[in-house]
Image (cartoon, rainbow, N blue to C red; front, side, top):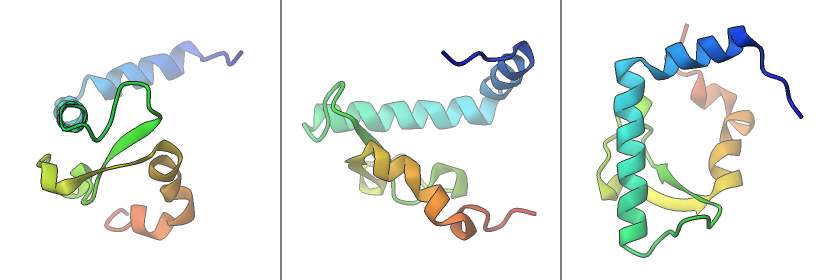
Length: 90
C-alpha cells in the first residue's frame, strides 16, 4: 500500500481548489456524461473521454472536441510525446 505524506495531500488539495482547475474538471465531467448519454461510454468501462484539443491548451468542452478512447492510451501519451506536452512552457 502506498503511503502519501501530509505535505503531498495538502499540495493536491490546494491544487484542486484552484478555480481554473475546478472549471476544467466540470468540463471533463460534462463531456463524460454526454458520452454516456450518447451510448459511446458506460460507467466502469475502462474508457476515457479524450479532448482532441486539450482544455489546458484552449480546447472546448463541445462534443465535437471529444472522443472516447482507451484509458491507457489517453493517459500514456505524455511519456511518449514529452515535447508536445511541454510546448509553450518555460
